[in-house]
Length: 362
Image 1 (tube, rainbow, N blue to C red):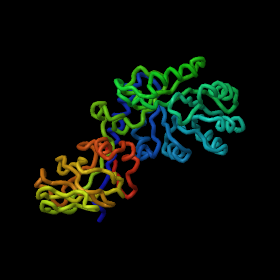
Image 2 (tube, helix red, strand yellow; image 1 turned 30 degrees about the horizontal axis):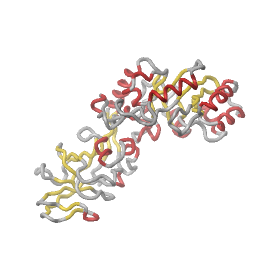
Image 3 (cartoon, helix red, strand yellow; image 1 turned 135 degrees about the vertical axis):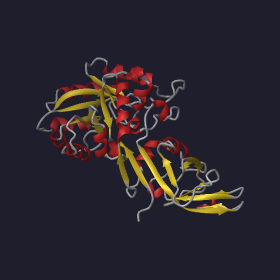
Image 4 (tube, helix red, strand yellow; image 1 turned 90 degrees about the horizontal axis):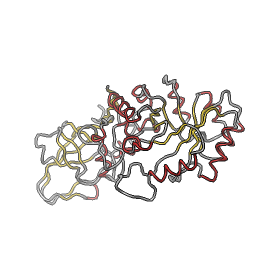
């Protein structure tokens, strides 16, 4: 018999989240970001759920090929562009748009003999300082792309470093500062603009642009620690559930698990859950991380091990072998678990292990 753990992906929740993102977009072109196997939800599932998106943004040719094979005929965007010259012909055959963020990618385009020209998104570095052209090189990059026969349309794009920062907090790279730099570089060019990620789309209506690129909100998680998913109106699309496989009655002073991290101060009944870091649960989750048992939120106690976690059953005396457990989903938001473990919901979604069976609803 399989272990009593499974993940559930809710396509109806994903459709709801896309519709909400579109309402915030107010007529702008919506790229649904589906990189990293749709944030762990499954690319083919995302294609069905995001059928109303204007385009899909992803990372590599293999994902693009899978999307086309799954029946996606609308635009696809490579968010990091092509990595080698030989990738360009395959990208053209798959009818992909491609980000261009460095001189070497322009060199490749100029030397390519493509079956048909492709759309490119010229990435400008306005303060994120990962990819893109700074002001000194952006003008020449734009001129070269406009003169390249293999390039059809040019869209101007950038990425915010702190769109998820509360508006009452100041930081080293502000949204307004990045927008001003974007306008300073690209204000002279009459091209479409793509600037808003999830946080900018939901929290910064002043950002504008012609295209938006929602990612995390489409999967039902928050954009930042200051806003819950519920407050944004998005629905969780991924639920991780399991069951209790044992219980133990401990005396005051006894310890739990590896390292004897948790010593109980009073008699305590604990439950053992079939879920561990080999399933994608964060090993660094501390005591007190919320888990739902029989619909009641209880605290994790003791160190997370490869295949099991232990929880305090003091408030659920009726729980026993086979009792239902939710690690995250509708009762325990994934962001709460992530915050407790010192990470983000993105990582937990993407870290879901292959050994966890996934079912689809909605």
